[in-house]
Image 1 (spheres, rainbow over the protein chains, first blue to last red):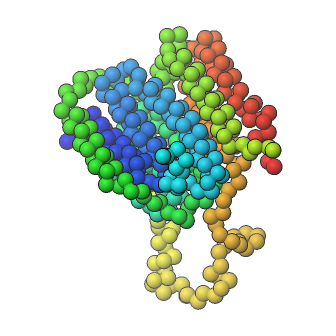
Image 2: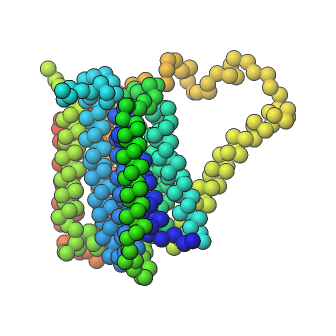
Image 3: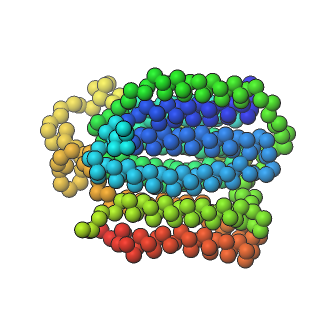
Length: 103
Length: 164
Length: 123
């Protein structure tokens, strides 16, 4: 059975759901950021698979994937800065302890 | 033949490393598993004949983002406390599995208009023309730079100590 | 095309096999009793040049490292745009040059801000 578009899309769906499960259940804020990176990678895989199977000569999906990577870099910079600020304030990054906005 | 072999190896390594990120007790080891997952994703890009994207994946994710994540792990001193879970385990698992089922169903039942042409390789020069020529993606490139600038300024302002 | 990357895969396989073999050889020699085993505290100590290590390994890092990581990240992402432009320099002409100059200028504003705010100085 040769590898087609469906294989790549299912692989990307699997990776996305692993990342989603981790981001919803983990209590360590750095692990949550890692799981968000996994989800972004899954989206990139499906973008590039679409680009190379549907419009092989246009490369639009690859351009989108470059921008997703730039946005991911910006996201991780600000996200980790927020995590470090939370760590300095609460001296811990357990998301169960961060409940100032809860009521 | 070689393509299928490479795809399955990369897929197994990638999913295994993603599960390792979730289930390793030590947060630092989880960060290293994340790096392995990024490298496997770069291999997947190579099998999709996106060679420049594979290099960018290594450069940005394995080179820069994982450095930031490992620094974050080392600066928050939570390595010994492990990788605890919250009370949402069952609902989150149900959500993830249902979403996976829906995605797989949609993907397998949609008639994709697959092109018969071969993908363009090497991709670096066409991508440069796409990004920087007169009718290319110039405004998104500049907006990406502005976003990066805003992220750097914001992160510095958030992190800096108040001098009082 | 893909065969070239097959060589990289071969390189990975050789690297992994080499490191595994290097780990397995002493264990196998010890198991076969070819090398003697008489440990003492000096042999068992952690090998490191200079001072002996004290305290735990997982100390908290100073957050000043984060500023350097931030600037590194920004310049790293800049490379993603500069590299294809440099490959296609002649065909893109002066227009591409102006675009890239604006791009570099925008990112360097952040660098100069970090410099002026003394975020890159070690206190």
